[in-house]
Amino acid sequence: MDEGERNSTVSNATKTKVWESAVPPAMQFGLGVIGNLIALVVLVKSAKSHKWRPFYRLVGGLALTDGGGILLVYPTVMVRYATDFTYDFPVHLCNYSSFIYTFTLISSAMIVCAMSVDRFMAILYPFIYNTEGKERRTNIMLISIWITGTFISCLQLMGLGSSFNYYPGSWCFLNFVGTTTLDRANSYIYSLFGLAILALTISLNFIVIVSVCRGMKSNIKVTAKRRRKNDIFIVIFLLIIVTVFGVCWTPLMFTILGHAGRWIEGNGARELLVLRFAVNNSIIDPWIYILLRKETLRALQRHCRGYCDKLDLATETSGPESNPAPSYSQSKSLDKTISTDDHVTISAGEKVRM
Image 1 (cartoon, rainbow, N blue to C red):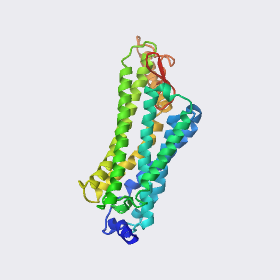
Image 2 (cartoon, one colour; image 1 turned 90 degrees about the vertical axis):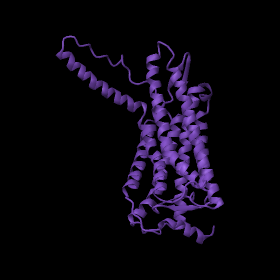
Image 3 (cartoon, rainbow, N blue to C red; image 1 turned 60 degrees about the vertical axis):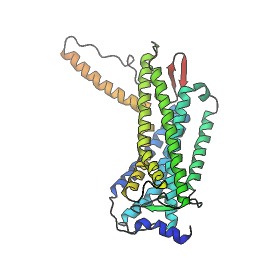
Image 4 (cartoon, helix red, strand yellow; image 1 turned 30 degrees about the horizontal axis):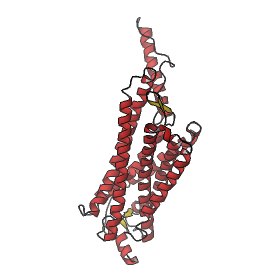
């Protein structure tokens, strides 16, 4: 595609007068940058406790990818809104925006999948998982993910397809609405790769959930009570991961695949909505992987227990036969969670380093 054709492609979505509220992209920008920044600060400040174990290295890579991508691309989005949709993206800015979007989304999805692989290996194959050099393997995995994301995101810049300025002219992405063979080939590569990541993530988490639920049926008296609390949390945690990732990621992938297969046509509010859904995954991620953590849950549990103890004390002073509240040592806070690399007992005689 020559320069003139690229210019016509880039400005295609900006010919007609449109109006869209600037509130959604502004909120996504603020929440995405602030949320991932908080996640990084919490991660660094708690480094002494987690010691940068593999799961936390992946969390840090996820926060850097999500927060950095939103920070780099959303100022270009807001320019379009700030100029009342009169500013048209030049070719180079559209290519830049397309690369950042595609890189951030696909790399984030691969890191989420890598975190699922980490939990899968930690729970089902602990002896293999805990061999020496697992931190180094995690670093290599992260670098490989970023290299793969860069390669896939550069395909449209290297001639396999093109970038396209989508409705309302505020964002550019790979041209999945194009009808040329190269555009459709690039769309198939991106969407099928993304769906494969989704399928692998769901499969791994499903296997982990089934394994944990089976472990909850064992009758080990010494650890049953504490393990049951942890196992329940693991199941809930993984269900949240699968649900959020699936809901946010699937619409964009099927929309791209639908356009490539010519089952879907057009460029409008639907395409804008599925992109925002995908970006929402980058906004929600830090709240799931960092703020829903052992220390936070323990603090909430201590707060709730303290409030309940006060109610019990008030009931005891007002009634003659109230039972005393349990001591703190008798009701320890939530045991290890899936967001740690501490020992968790899954079955008889087996300890897993998470």
